[in-house]
Length: 288
Ligand code: OOG
Ligand code: MG
Image (cartoon, rainbow, N blue to C red; front, side):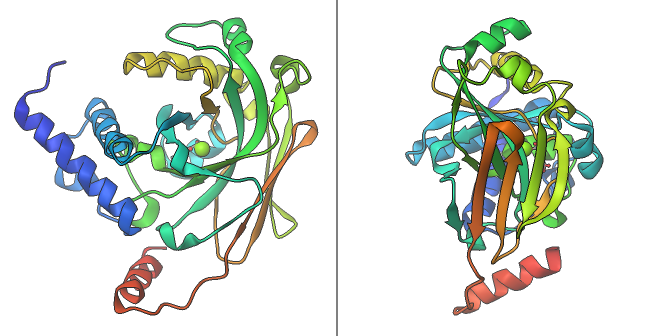
């Protein structure tokens, strides 16, 4: 579909609203409140423009993420359609990192499976082709941080907001020659632990029946947007469990059975020193 100039201006303005919200860690009303005609296709155009603003600032594409690939996630958020978003290098957090939560609005964390592609993947591919493109697999976590008030949205809203993605961390890569993604990911127990206690548990089988199906879907959806999944890119398959709020001063670990684990610590909350950050934190509180 060709968009006219007015549409493009709208797309750019909406992308800027979400980009500013993320930069200022401040929630904004859902786009569909002021643009009720926003559809999913336009939502993806906003996502592309939003991420392009970040690429223009020097970030680089690092891969893609899938969302709502499990019933647990669909139930938690009340959305039942598969979505995808873009990952950039600036979103990557180190395994074992200590994160300052001030740069987020109301972050949540969820367990993920990450694929590392060692050859490109595009369009309609079979499960076997997808498996052959996987160079390595790792346990991962994703930080999601909807830029919308109350972490509530409709499908076009969340798509425009880069599918809520805000960060991701990856554990040790297991080479596909030592960890077979087909057999190894068929029914892998996955647990999200907060301060040593299990908060969410599930199985990799909850991800579309098998996480490799997410990779198949990612290749198709990216191709619809004119993108090829490149060698060296990361693909996050989507969480098998619901996400949990990420609070200051916590230690979070994703345990993915024989695949391994990945962890992150959150910094203690800092004392608010300026009026602006105090107001910001009040706005955040009322939003929770
Ligand atoms: C949207 C992102 C969904 C997943 O793994 O299912 C997602 C959200 O929950 O806000 O990342
Ligand atoms: Mg996710």
